[in-house]
Amino acid sequence: MRLQKTIAVLALVSLAVIPVFANGGAEDASGAMTDTLVIAGAGEWVQEIDREIAADFEAQTGIKIEYQVNPVAQYKDVVKTKLNTGNAPDVMLWAAGLELKSLPLEKFVDLSDEDWSARMKDEHKTGATINGKLYGFNSWSADPAGFLYNPVLFERYNLEIPTTYNELKEVCAVFQANGITPIFENAGSSWHLSHFFHVAGPYALAEDPAVYDKLNSNAIKMAEVPAFVRMLNQMKELVDLGYLGDEYLSQETKHSREGMTQERFAMMMIWPSYQVEIEGSYPDQGALDYKMFPNPLGLNPDQKATIRPSSPGGIVHLVPKGANQEAALAFINYRANPDVLNKFYAARQDLASPAFDDVTTNYMPNAQKALIETTEKGLPNFGGFVYFFDEKFYTDAIRGLLIDETTTEEVLGQIDEYRLRLGQALGLEGF
Image (cartoon, rainbow, N blue to C red; front, side, top):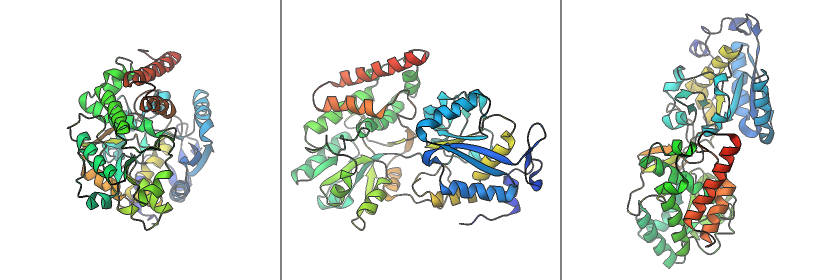
């Protein structure tokens, strides 16, 4: 969709705030002309649509956008060095959620009073807010997760969609009796088992809204969070009952695609847009008809799952304080315009959970629609908001439990020791 060059949009770009757009630039705090804004990003964080929007902005304001993109592995150190030496970029891309706390936030503009902030969804705002201040413009996707399932199999065996852990076990028993592995698990991947904490985290929050803060100050241990204990015990029970099959320890994510389309597996724990990836690998096999229900692991056995986990929202735009901050804010405000957002999301169909309700161009997978319809709200997931979440470490620890090398208490103890060690190394209060 082409951007309409109208007076209304020009007003949104903040002609009233930046004095000299008509001359091909804007005045900085010293009165000098600013004709270029530098935006720092990493790897694939900056895509072609971002550059296209930047070109539109330049055409309307005369301010050129220069992207400085570094490899992801180097980006954090490069940008932090620039911040510490007074050479910060005018706009900076950064991971949402707890990663924001690794920055000297006193050097960034509080965006809480920007007009667009009232339109941003709460789930996305949470991932860009620290200590009550909104630091990030979040236009990515706060992706949930749940059990992706094939409705054909449920209909074939006259099964209701499970809403509790006990109901999940009942459904699994039917599939197993009919030669279908109930749950695909890719424990061979170095990350997937850890994501069950993402699901259990919101259940822990529902029981204690301060639980993440307590963990981040080391005021409580992981074993003191009932949802984590229940989740691990339930995972172990599913394995012992054979509901994850015989090959779950060696399977990787890619193995699910063929298995789901060939009806060897009934369901898997994943993000909603994964059904699009399955469709891409095995077109016209019904993957786009898959649905999703909330994962009940972590709840009491007969407690209904009504909460979905929400990620922090990917990558956010931050505005460092400096001579060009008004021009930088004008660029952020421009990107928050509904027409520009729709153009962005039309090109980023992988971002299935837009940050703004007035977006109409994104594709929402069938699974995500089903998950939203069957839950009451989303709460922040574990990994994006709790210190020292390491996918590989957590996955390795859980794997030990599943193969009877450790107990639930020992797994949580290993994680506590890991978190304590890192917290002490960084000198964090409470550790």
